Image 1 (cartoon, one colour):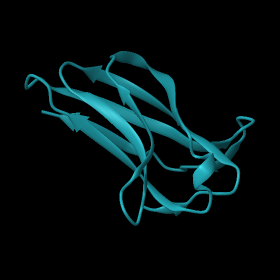
Image 2 (cartoon, rainbow, N blue to C red):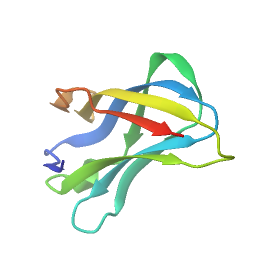
Image 3 (cartoon, rainbow, N blue to C red):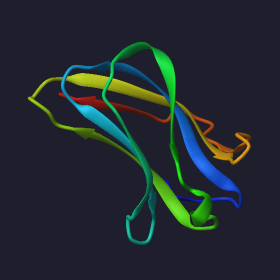
Length: 110
């Protein structure tokens, strides 16, 4: 699902949890019309509890139509599952300006 970045958008924050035996998982905000990555972060640690993470650098892209991509990156053929929740777009002061209201995704690598 695509959405327009609001004026003042600075970062995307989210929570993640799960076990990752082999894959790494990337979280990226991409521009809709050409797929260009506006910000990205890679997760490669396992956690039983939700941890916060973010990607920065959205300020120069206000009003652009974007989408969020979650992608498992194959390594050594192992398995894993990562849950994402509480995705928010925040301004430079850390205030939420857009919130994903439903559980977002589980990325599995089998």
